[in-house]
Length: 105
Image 1 (cartoon, rainbow, N blue to C red):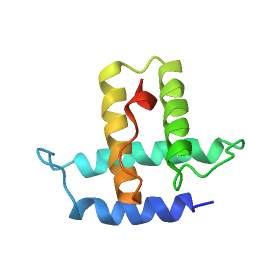
Image 2: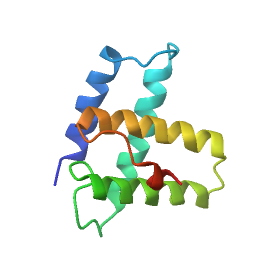
Image 3: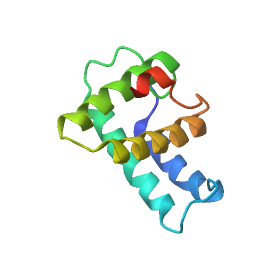
Image 4: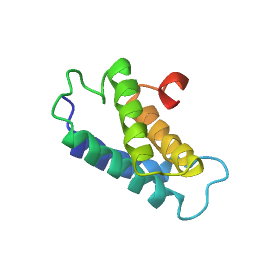
């Protein structure tokens, strides 16, 4: 299993060096915060049978579960979309590419 804390630390170092077009000055902190929350969520999932930081199918299942978790707390659609965009950045950094569209619905 890939180390979640090491991946998050490496991502936090990578993020300021790879800004997305149109991002504001605080966007790195927002992306880092949202990815950190997702990583905390992954850490609570004891039933992970595959590594969501190294396997594309496990990635999509984990993001789908996280989206359902957010919706459980009535998170509005716009923030959920922004959070999923942050997770795409994380997965691009990890080399898995963005989450498949089906997992985002």
